[in-house]
Length: 466
Image 1: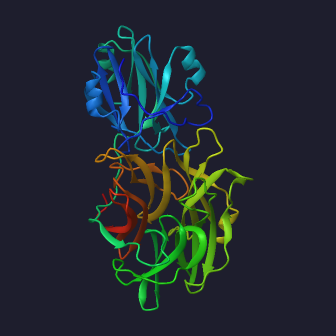
Image 2: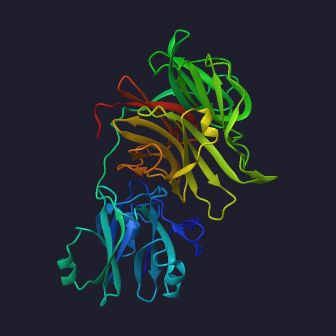
């Protein structure tokens, strides 16, 4: 098609992308992928779920018609996936869908293609529940069309004049499972103590049964600084301890496990919101009473050179796998020193929290746009990983924080998005999932339209799986 709404220029997909990649930012996922018809150019174009520029209105204004849902792909990729792009051929006035590197960028450019535009992530090999995607050529219209298996049968494609069926190019889902039905939002904490330099931002809860309270909640602040402790007997009403746990400048994001009467806490260090390039890393502390903590042991080392910010490593979660008893450490990493740096989610696993310091690191997910704040819980054979993204609002003319859920059948790989993402939109992020009494308790930071933060919660029945 000759006229496609312009997309904002972003970083590329890995070091091989050197041609100025554009990133199409969706507003929902797993990204519904659509096909539009451009009658002026006799061209079918495959595009992802509407974003802030390629809205239905913009596509219609450009002359596109006959929007058709094709399949579901992924905004957030993992190492098992391949990035998929579209390229523009100005002579043929045709968009073509290409998995990254097949053909190579150099070959595409030699053939006259330009405007390499990121679309989505897909699987290069077949996974359970996925279907293959093919490409067909129409010699009269000089048009490549992308079609998932069973969208249109081969005989019909041939009757329409299409030839040269190519593929499978990659594999996608025609449909997937979902998340849990959740209650309405309830605010549980705001900035209220003298030592709190900003609002409570995250809440990690353990069943401690100490000091007259069944539940203890460890919280960090929006801008970092000290860490706090609060108590509850119903998981809704919280009584803050007036004294901060730690006075380490830049501490943030506590995540706590209580195992065999030992409290294990991991948290970020070096995070200061007012600094443009903080050097962040992750430490472990232990405690016998949940209040007095040991000196820190570094689990994820700072990546720096003298005077140079190398990588962020923060937004950490300590998870104990119920089936195996093994500990897993999840965190967000962004390697600023790399050209076209992407947001990444990493994991380590070990028999003990201390063993996480030397365990191998595995990258679980990635995105050319903002992807952070991984947090995991397990239910009925499935691992649910919450993440935060920064996307165009469907209500306001600006980008906002949103929450997306990924699922897998194992804690250290294979995570992919569920349908209906983002499960919560405008201003909901840092989503901590806990299970008590067959109920899901989700605590998260909520940002009002005026920018004010608070700590909020929702609940969901685990007996009502979707």
